[in-house]
Length: 154
Image (cartoon, rainbow, N blue to C red):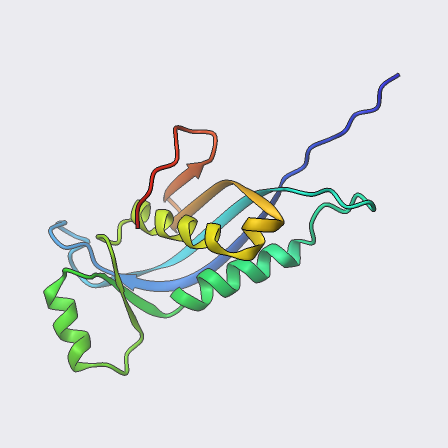
């Protein structure tokens, strides 16, 4: 009888509070914020001898260092949004980050995915399988590595 060699994934969720605005969008053109939630599912690249796939703390540390520390209590704005550029030029002490694209959920998630792929953890320990970004309990966007092809951006 053959024994199963199971494939397990691990999922970790992190949360942060962040503000943004979407120029040209009726309601979201106003400055506002969300309690964002990111769930990331990974597949371990190497199975150690002890069969302990990954320590979930490794994934948590990566997500906190790369994402939460960059975004928590920060206002992000499109780098071509002159209203916000002028505001932050006059208010440099406020935490802010210029963003390469209009900061929609999809663009934020794409930026996150690209940042995670640069991290040592995703180069040596795990493959990104899926990531879901929620900006509210009723609105989210999902990246699934099995969908379509990778594109360069952000």
